[in-house]
Amino acid sequence: MTASPSFLGFPDRLDDGCLPRVVIFAAAHGSTYPGKDSSGYALSAGAIRAASQGDAALVEHWDFDLGGPLFDGKPACCVDAGNIETVMHDNAGNRDRIEARTREVLALSAVPILLGGDCSVTMPFIAGFADHGPVWILQIDAHIDWRDELHGERHGYSSPMRRASEMPHVAGMVQVGLRSVGSARPSDVEAAQRYGSRFVTACDIHAQGVEAALRHIPEGARVVVTLDCDSIDPGIMPGVAARTPGGLTYMQVIDLIAGLGRRADIAGFDLVELYPPADIDGLSAMTAARIIVNAIGAIVRQG
Image (cartoon, rainbow, N blue to C red; front, side, top):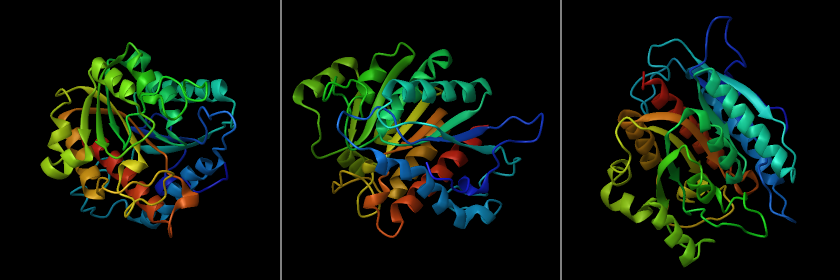
């Protein structure tokens, strides 16, 4: 991955004796399908970090998305630990490195925020919580990602929620923003429903607001959030591989994150599937950067 400035200019470590509340890190590649090229996703973290630079000098200013400054009057407590060295098609090695880094962050009692990469990075990220469960998953996505395998690969971007459902430390999941058509067949939908996944479509959110999703999260639960950028309407987030009309708005996404922070404990957060080659004038990267800001703000406000 190309070197880039850190997110919001955050340091890569804090002073001795200070533990971070949030640790950001990036992984360009997870489990790439045979014959596929995922190199476009390797640009994602750098694009998000670059887009954040306009706000880097403003972290102590009032943020109307958050209702106050980013750190809410508390000491700055976020670090950007840089990039995990991943290699396209070294699928098992990439999974091991992502899971190991996630475990390292959790050992600090910090909240990991992962910048992908396609959503195959989500599986080792969630696996890293094995000693920190039980956790619920809030997936914000246009698709359910429940294929058992595709092209002979069981850990590719069409399978993260199926694999997560098999992890003993995952207590349940809510899948929100669903719309249009993807790789899921009727049998995949039926498997997700048998598991007990709660489906909340984009139409449900447009009609009922974010409470349509939040009500399925047990109060006080530890929740890992995985946000696929194609959950957001392409008029706002054009930089994705599968543009589909009717997606969530930016305000709905940040209301969902803020509401989750008030209802439960955000234990981890990943943002995946930003595809910079399809972006328009950096609009998607800017939106993704603001979503990460809101995730940090919600985590800080959890106390």
